[in-house]
Image (cartoon, rainbow, N blue to C red; front, side):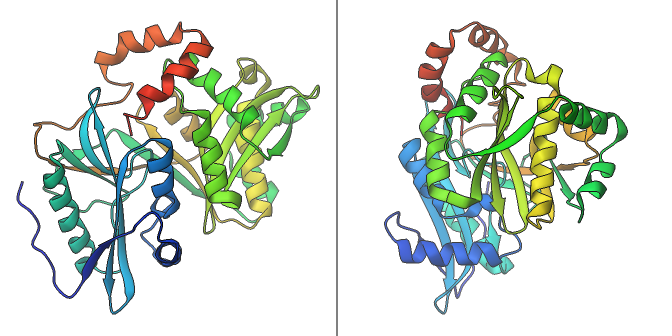
Length: 353
């Protein structure tokens, strides 16, 4: 695939991990840029490098001393899943966030040069909106976003009737929500949940690192039974006036008690109290259980545009549980003792990105 033409009058620079002053400038740009998301924040560089030990290329376009655009990239070179350059590994949104087409093109031009120099099989940009109609595009994923209304009652009534009944069931069961200061209760529920689904868990230190790096913008909410037993938990990100529940887990008994439904209601209710405007239910694969669950809440799916520049492969990679080639691996993982799964999982999941 041919490289884009290189625009002029812009300088493309790489954010060095130890450059805290430029990182602060980067984050100020991200907060103000309409195209930016939580996953464009500079703190992800430390997460990707320190937790997963991947090289990063956090690029920014500068003109007259002002940042005009950013493109965070991670290089994942795995014997299991291939060699790729992605914006951004472990994120649902990515790609360029820029103030002008010239800045966006300059950043993508530099990303393509880096990709070719590294010898990757592909460059992946996880765009919310389409950018390159001539690039192969993954249409497996959608996102769900909806306005948070101004009152608790209005938000409850906006939930479709059957789903609202599940929320009321959780209330009737005496469930309560608590904000956790650490990741311990969350991780226990999360790890058990992903094991039941046959997928490896992120390492516990990843969640601790997220809370340490993003502080008040990364929060764990846990639902407990009247006897204090943790039933369901969610780790959420906050960005501008949005809340994004990103990782979740639950006990097997949570479903019968409607703890999962109550969990997301409590997150929405608390977000309403905080004056937030958007509830971002996050990414799901089409025609899966999580996809149906979010639609039942009255959220409409919006396609995500994951675009690829292919170098050493002929087709888009399918490194996800929907791929039939992983069916046996998923079935085997489900039967694994949780201690072994939690030890082995991080070695696998770091290569997925």
